[in-house]
Length: 338
Image 1 (tube, one colour):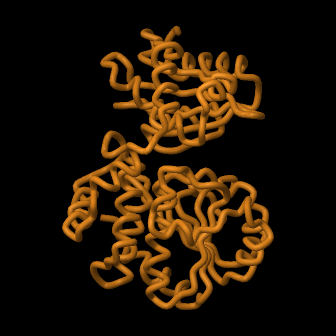
Image 2: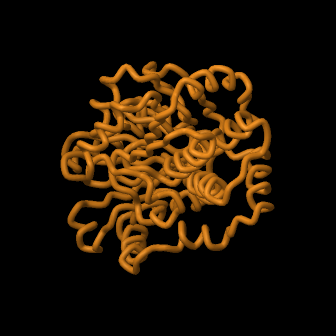
């Protein structure tokens, strides 16, 4: 387990001096960002703290059903109000990210404050803008870290239905329902405790993973049949989707979630990328199995990062040039000929 006790004294110091606490997650939040924020917010509120939660931008459909989501303010929708909340807080806790750029349009307001800042995260290469860092890159999710941190602060097991559901969602989304990630025996012991408390795993699974429109399934079929490219010499695969193709299939935010993992089911592929054309840049998502460090690849060539087997980055040029650069980078990084 995370040695939460080594953080406990310092964390209690910050919490003890704070009455108005802001929790904020990263831009384009996933299930772990929202789950960890809702879970920690639940604990802090029940500990007598005033808690506000902000997401830098909109939430994806597959997490909008969660208990606690209605308490989250969207910065891009209520900018002035969110700025007031940020500036009136006496402690800011940032969850599931460690680079200021991940604050999106809220970055300027958050970073110009002198308010103490705590990071709770599981990604590598943390920035230096925090007063306290609670991080373990060997954990599968920030939600797992929050669970252990709350258990330590509480002096034992803490449970509410909202807390349990949020932790469960955070863990299954960041591991793809245990298809990838740094999950361990500790992770499964946490899941067992949540299940013993009555978590409705079937409901949660269907809400998270079986909640898409017909257009998404058709887009998936098109991406795999028409757009998937295999590079045998590099043991790699990539999919390129243009804005026109996404529009053709009625793309909604989150529709391509999970596509990048699918080529990894091929026995001779251990690296996969999906390359998506955005308005002013090209977005890359990388996944691998085994010993291909996609976080290093993303950081070296795309200014990104993430985990050993799951990472991403951006490229600010045309789609054609981005794909060309990607292929050259892959060849150089892996020493293969595509």
